[in-house]
Image 1: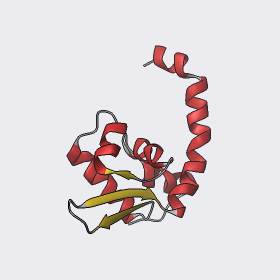
Image 2 (image 1 turned 135 degrees about the vertical axis):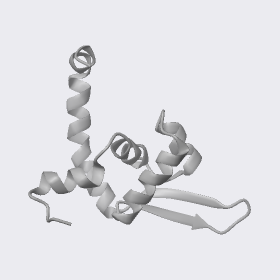
Image 3 (image 1 turned 120 degrees about the horizontal axis):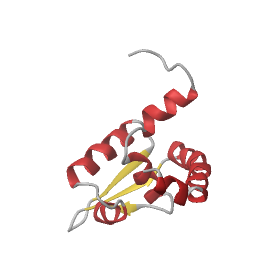
Image 4 (image 1 turned 45 degrees about the vertical axis):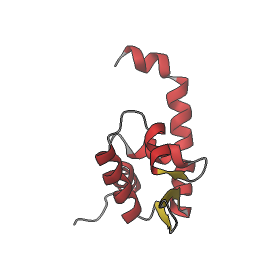
Length: 107
């Protein structure tokens, strides 16, 4: 694997794709169970959500906590690294919100 060429290259590698930024955004208010997360990330399939969560977990951006109880409970939350990534996504959200109509018209 080649080294990153710049910080943007590294960030894009972590959050690249359609679903990862939306998953991270859904988690920015606090931990969510899988079903709650799936409802918040409209349109994602179960298979894709599992895959994306595993990738984010392997990059130590998302934490998966298993509660040993009946029925089993699993929660996903942001790590400190994930929280710092949210701080970087907030300006992007603000930019998108400010230009929403313009971006919709060119879609």
